[in-house]
Length: 219
Image (cartoon, rainbow, N blue to C red):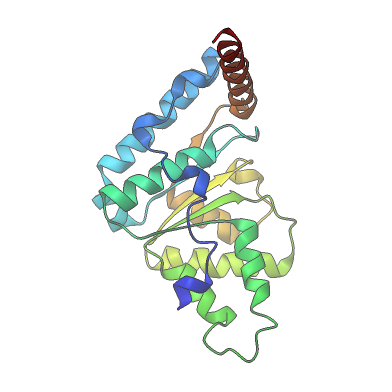
């Protein structure tokens, strides 16, 4: 029943079929971006090959770049699919804003003791692997700091793997040092290209559309 209520903890439909094997590195245009994403993939493949050791020590991943649309979410979705379908591991996915909105939704739910803030936080704290997308994009408030500290500290103590994407290097997050230090200790920090591939994909889609329309005209 709790799983049904936390509907944000599932991969977005657009990423259901993404895999590490079909993550297209060639879509990045600049040599610097290709070099950076190739290095990122090597670290992620190492992490995946040594997953048992990573689980034993609670070591996750922290993917970051200032550029929006650089492929961070697509990459963690690819990792999630690999974990779910190949490794048979429970994975929960949510953006940080979805987590916060779900927490706030419990505040006016006094009549339903089965869905409380405490139970929601416990659920997020105990998921085998938790992916938090767009971490640090929310406006900083003390209560937000407290909630994420609860989740991250609980997972830290239990050596649960957490995977993050962010538009900021870890040291630039506005969160309390308690949060940043725990993430620092329990993740591989992986820089991603400073290049938006959404624009490239959009141009490719337009070229395919134009080509298809021209072929229709010929036939």
